[in-house]
Image (cartoon, rainbow, N blue to C red; front, side):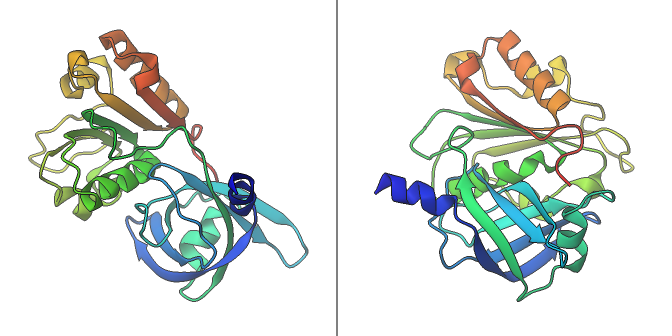
Length: 247
């Protein structure tokens, strides 16, 4: 039975686009109807495949943006020189078909059964799997306290901004804007560094669990900072997507 489930996740299926919504000028969320979807855990990802008329195929992995039990969704950032993201963000329409397989991954996942304080640290589109975790927390009515540090270039680049602004009930979010800040901005205005990590991180004696997602250099900086604060390496879960992510 377990082998059949694994094979199912590795099988390509065609999903239908249910809805699309623009999160920023370059980022779009795509909600999919995948009849053969077996379900997923918060933090997993899936593979998308596009096939050109001449038979050329391109595949990319995208974090799942939805909580378990919700329709599967991905959030895609357009890269101008990419092979896949420009189509997904600019051309894909409701009712179009999209090949996918998954879910994939079992390391970078969160479950409400873990009642430790939760530290989430995101850089840019690294917010996507962490959003799935936040939605899962709310959906499961978990009382786990959450602190999030989210690094974006500007306020206009904050993905899921309205949704994040509405969070309360034990969720604290610190935004740092690295390039431009609006008039009156009183939050951090720099790249994530050791001092900022120290400011946001839960005390080690509370046995927190940390999830860090973003570009490779960002993730390495944060993970190193947390270990230097005394976080055990096995309590710092990381996921990185390279300097610019997949295209």
